[in-house]
Every structure is written in C-alpha cells, then in structure tokens.
Length: 164
Image (cartoon, rainbow, N blue to C red; front, side):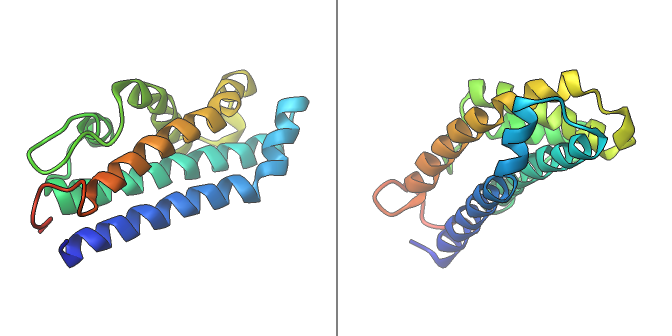
C-alpha cells in the first residue's frame, strides 16, 4: 500500500473520530432537546452541531475526491455533486456511501446551506427537530458505510497501486 493510501485512511479515520467526539460533547444537549421544547439558544446550539456534523462528513468526501478520484466538483452545485459522486464507484474505488445514505444526508446538506446563509433566529424548530431525531441513525449508517469503504482501501481490499 502506498503512503498516499495510508494518509487517506488516516484522514478519514481522524474525521470519523471528530464526528464521534461531536456526538459525545453534545450528547446531553441532543438528548435534552428531544425531550422538551428547546429555547432559542439551544436551537442555535443544535443548529451548530448539525452544521458541524455535515461539515465533518463533507471533509471526508473532499479527502476522497481530492486524493482518490482526483476530481473535486466545482460550481454552484458542487456540494450536491460531491455527495452524489460518493455514491458512484469509479476505476479507483468502490462507492463510499449508498444512494439511500446520500438521500438521508441531503437533508443535512440542505440545512448546512440554510445555516450558512441565514440568521439563527430564523431556524424553525419544527423543521430542525426532524433532523435532530434522525441524526444518530444517519450517522450510524454513514459511519458504517465509510468504515467498509476505508477497509476496502487496505491491502486486502484495495485493487489499485497508488492514489496519487
């Protein structure tokens, strides 16, 4: 296995650990807002967690797109294109995530866009609540698929010689 492959695996593993840490650090908040109506500050905090979650997932996708695919989408739809790219296999790799997982993640991508371009006081708890309630299950599924993908890069599962 080339050093480049090892570096990609290390970066993916690091980002997975960071997302796990995000869930650990905010476990109490995420639990609390699922049990009762959050106040404005809690809504803003949960929104930040959701934003960080998707950013972490996208960081993994960017590592793969840059170092394996050598093709990082650009343009106005680049974030959606990147998500879609991860569902496709190519000559260097298998798909990273399933189409079903990508569909579930698309809601978090959409929220990330809203969060980055809006004021936090515009966040509607009724909409945010749907994302919060599914968050853990979405992460479990996404992480599982990413671990399978990462394992496919290891010597026994990797067909290529170098990631470039």
